[in-house]
Amino acid sequence: MTIGEICNREVVIVDRATSVAEAARLMRRHHVGDLVVVEALEGGRRPLGIVTDRDIVLEVVAMGVVPDALRVGDIMGASLASVRETEGVFETLRYMRGRGVRRLPVVDEAGGLVGIVTLDDLIELLAEEMGELARLLGRERAREQAARP
View (cartoon, rainbow, N blue to C red):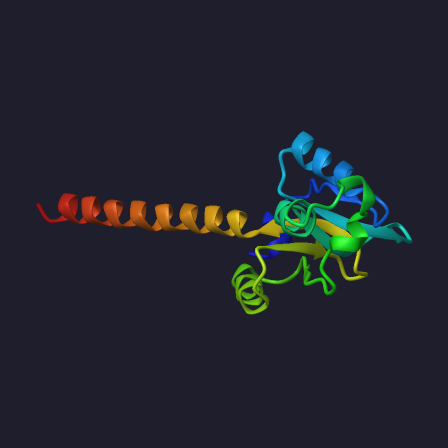
């Protein structure tokens, strides 16, 4: 299974010039903990960074900075980790662990944004798969009992 098959394709985006206050309002309105910062790309958008609710707390609120005085481009991370939509789920998980990130923009071959995958998404997928394995064990036991009373 590729990461493109499970990523969330409804990504809330902003550009670098969006105020931090507006970013916080967008997070609240869309019930998300992150926004992908993008720039226009021929035929799409290229991710430049991610701003999280934690970034806002640590960089703005905790420092006593007025949210309208900063732009998301001021507080987003310096380097962005992303993953191609053709990557496998477990390769993506290893990459996230190696980079120490909980969220990754998912991009196409041209680097255009197609979605986002989060640690929560992967945990949910793995929990579903573990449930399927548990059901298999129960069916195997029942099949054996029916075949060998």
